[in-house]
Amino acid sequence: MATQVAAPATPVGLTASSQTVDKSVLLMLAAFVLVPASFVPLAIARGGALIVVPYQHFYIVSAISLLAAVVAGALALTTVQIGLYRVLFMCLGFMSMGAIFAVHGLTTPGILVPNLFARFAGSAVAASAYLSLAAPAVFFAAAYAPGMSRLERRLPFWPAGWLVLFVTLGLVVYGAIAIKTWMLAQLPLSIPPYSTALAIGSILLFFLAAVRQARAYRVTRLESQAGLVVAFVLLAEAAAAMVLFPVWSWGWWYYHLLMLAAVALAVRALMIERARGKSFRSIVEAARQLQVSVAAEEFDVEAVAALVAAVEVKDRETQGHNRRVAELCVNVGRELGMTAPEVRVLARSGLLHDVGKLGIPDAILQKHGPLSAPEWAVMKTHPEIGLRILQRCGHFKRELLAVLYHHERMDGSGYPHGLAGEAIPIEARIVAVADMYDVLTSDRPYRKARSQTEARAIIQSENGTHLDPRIVVALLKTFGEKEPQVAIEV
Image 1 (cartoon, rainbow, N blue to C red):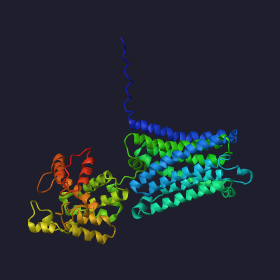
Image 2 (tube, helix red, strand yellow):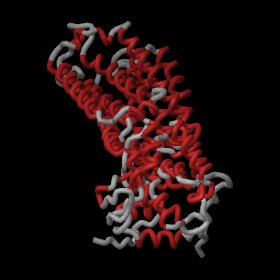
Image 3 (cartoon, rainbow, N blue to C red):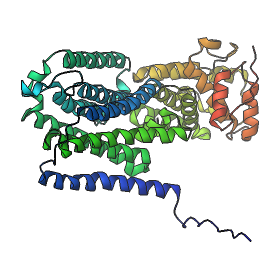
Image 4 (tube, rainbow, N blue to C red):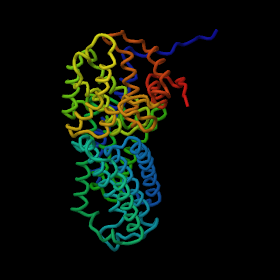
């Protein structure tokens, strides 16, 4: 008789989260302790024996460049979707690393160029090695620079295209000069004190990025965040090995392995999360903590917090309504693939959509029962009142459109201007759907809240006539309905 052996039970308390933390701790232990400790025997041996194998060098450099290009490609796609400079600088960091290190490989003596060390103190291959870490270090440090998130709120994203073009042209020109001319060989970038200065600068910038990323890891403990911390530390250690050990020695080869490990960690983090069904956008947002927060939008601009508080004091029966609408707007915006600046506008639009009620008399606003025709006429003025209030603040642009037009309807039956279809700004159409859903599912003085099922049915019945069908579908998807059955009226 066959004996069945039961699989060992998972120890109590050992969850996927704790296993992830354990892996992350081991990675950090290796990066912060084991790698620096390994420098000691290499230093004692003065780098170790020389291993002069140009073609093998070209292969390992090409592998590192290819992996860096994969990460840059994923970040480029995310940059287009999310529209943040912090992601763009990460992309440019990996792009510059891959491109300059590819030049380092192509200029290996005997590959495309002769050995220029016999004629010059430096060479393109050595200069490219130092620059392949110095250039990305600058971009990574910029991505983690203090105040960058606030700068993003005020700086438009359109200059990003010119920045990408400028960096791309610069890399192409650099490659052409390095491969086709001897100009770089005549520069002292690869000899002390210049090489030392480049290495120290790179190390400091990588550690700045690592420290800033570590702060995010301490909050959420995500494996992808730990991977970035370790990658930055390994790149800093690669810069140290590059300047400490002689060319072709064991120590010199070690810096290549450290760079390979760093970019492989970045690729691994992306591919593992991608295999779990996550988009590159959600992976990068989680790793860098870039998700738009309604609370952050409320308190980042003092005028928003003050106005939201004033509206809730004025209309106590609907406290929390503005924040709930803002959360729904943010979720819909993300479902529609809107960029981070656009989602921020939605958050503020949801928070402020009813600010015009500050100008509505309390007798109308707090009436327990249906409004009369004259009272409705007064109530319908609140979008225009809201517009005038926000115009005086001077902080808002697209939010003005959401506040003014969130009661317009797709068939033109809304107010204040009777706009229809695509003539209604997208922000206003999103707020209209979110506002209706929260009104239906909240208690009001004149009726009890509807159930979520009833509210969704009513939302679907308004689809195509009063509400934008695409936004209705997006809202229902945020509730976990994969294929909402929405009847689209033509």
